[in-house]
Image (tube, rainbow, N blue to C red; front, top):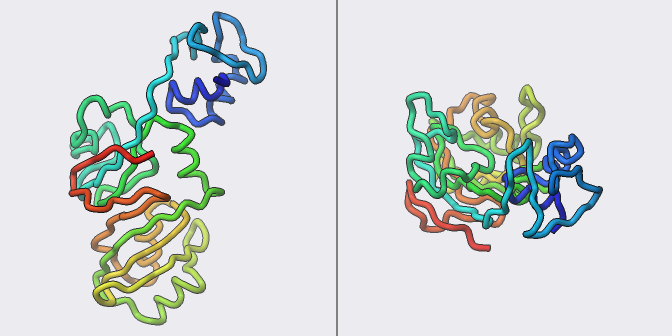
Length: 219
């Protein structure tokens, strides 16, 4: 296995972060600085910052996060997603975030390469949400969000909207992941998102997973 892949799998880093650690001479193989592109085997001792590394089996789970839980290890008085998980999953890291008032699909993994692919903007992985607004969305505003976008402080936000039960209930598709982007987009037009629930992220879907429950992700 290539050294950067070994370091990434052993630590949960992205492959790019592993390359950086190697370039910074933080990684040693059998006590020696590695060569470019070096391969390692089970017989080699690999260390990062003096700590021995071993490759873990790659695990990815889907959690249906309820409202009221923070995506953090330190809840600062609030409940965290790790309160919902058994101890053997506490080392997994979340892929992206959902704010405390949002619910739905959250991925956790120790596969740094997968996490990087899902979160890097150039891969444009689709995210799907169901939202409810405090008041009916006006047709002009729907057209603006779909066709033109809404200018926010960090750039234009363009979403794909499909009406569900009524004009307060919408399915939102997007390929970005800026902080609270959906909430800020509607707030800029005078609406408040009162419910926000993620149902899909890339190839992963909640399906019939109940709130607060988790399952291993296929593949």
